[in-house]
Length: 127
Image 1 (cartoon, rainbow, N blue to C red):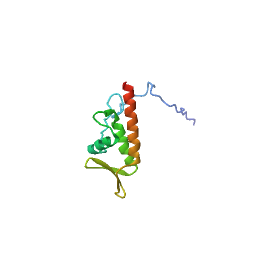
Image 2: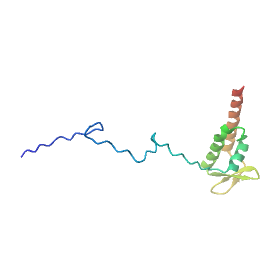
Image 3: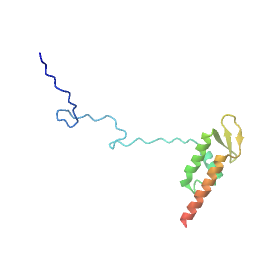
């Protein structure tokens, strides 16, 4: 008894014998539906951002393009396990594990220098 077996042939999507593909129920990144908007939760309080802006010599209202610098400074402090505490309008840096407060920090000094440089470059470009 010789049975005739057909070789397996991989069918493609262009095969006319194949029924049409069903649409996927959810396509979040397709062009048919907009991408879901990312929810932004503030990581730092408004007063901490304002006080850090003053510490860096940046006015958030006058220089809105440099908000990233303030946020970057706050994130760098957080990466080094420091929290920012605002007391009487002044900023102090509290080490997370020992609750020791400092009046200045090298990360803030570096960001202050960067802010001064960026402001001077921006002023020279306006001329």
